[in-house]
Image (cartoon, rainbow, N blue to C red; front, side, top):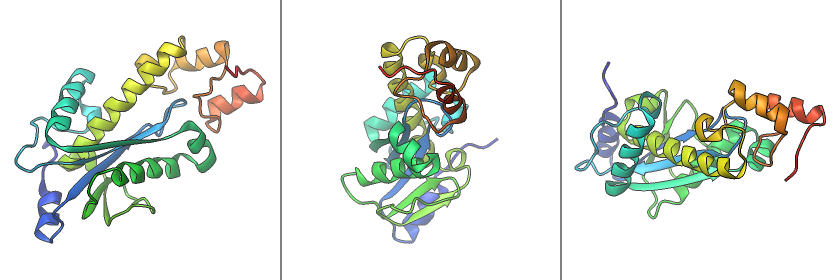
Length: 210
């Protein structure tokens, strides 16, 4: 199977979009933690080898590629908080994180290539949605690797303050051990209260607020 390539970026450059950014998010599914987005502007002459959909890479390979991307590309990372996820809904919060990541770039892009089938409505530049973009488009692949690596590190840090939930390995996703810990230890401030397993436990009145 062929990996991602630079076709979408090259076509955009040919149409006059000089600064093209790839954008992806990670963390829609977990029960805990923020949703994280990355925006990456690759230098066509300095693209790290081995870029791919972050889900197709090992954690070690992602970490190596993350550092390689940050060394040669323009990178921006942003989050939407658990509170924003609960207030807005996860789709809108993930779009907000994408909008923030693009907005934090030092220079406004001419075009954002967005993973998925929707363009965030608050994007500060024109956008193009690419379904399965993280497996097709190198800039989006780079963004997926950066977003996944940064969010995993954030969840590892949170795990040190809230041991027992396994966030250092499950990244906040609803593994059996995580759900068991929710029942035994209760709900933390970093859990998404609108997500069903968390909501059900709260509804049963079993919660910790520290």
